[in-house]
Length: 274
Image (cartoon, rainbow, N blue to C red):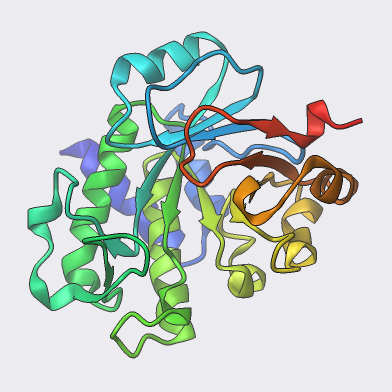
């Protein structure tokens, strides 16, 4: 009970914009600051298949639910930090907590992902407890950070009249609960809101900034020495020669993979391209 009270105190401080005070509370309790990977950190992104713990990278980004505790322990033992993926902005029918989402928060289907639906992020009284519980699961599995996906619903055909500010409010809540449980948190894509959120989050996970000519918009993270974990896809025609020179120049942690995000192929610009 005491631990829960402290969590809510930290959440209150974060929600009021008093991040430094929240950090002081954590330090007083003997808790180190949450995970914040620096620029040019290396990474592997694997959301499908058996995790292959054989890559010489700083960070593994893996699925929160489908990655066994023993795998996370093994990654830590090998010196890796572990970021855990979950979808904060959509409903997925095959998750253990899928039955907790009432019909009232389910919107349009997500194109290309059968069964997945956008969420009405304005209904924080419904979604808040679900996302807090996911954060608790991540902490219990000893994830170092979180990759909450689909946090740009306001810019997509969700079926709800979501506004820019609705998204800022929701993303701020997601970041604050992550920090309350001493977890670093990424901004996933959502490039247009970087100016409003870069101070709040700890790193970013970006897809296809080269393809969409958006890499320059990621520079606020670089300027704050926060990692830009960036991925391009072979299916889009990306190659080391077309992607890596500019990525390395800009300080991005770019990898090239296939869309299924299995262990391989993995091409890492920072260490492989010369």
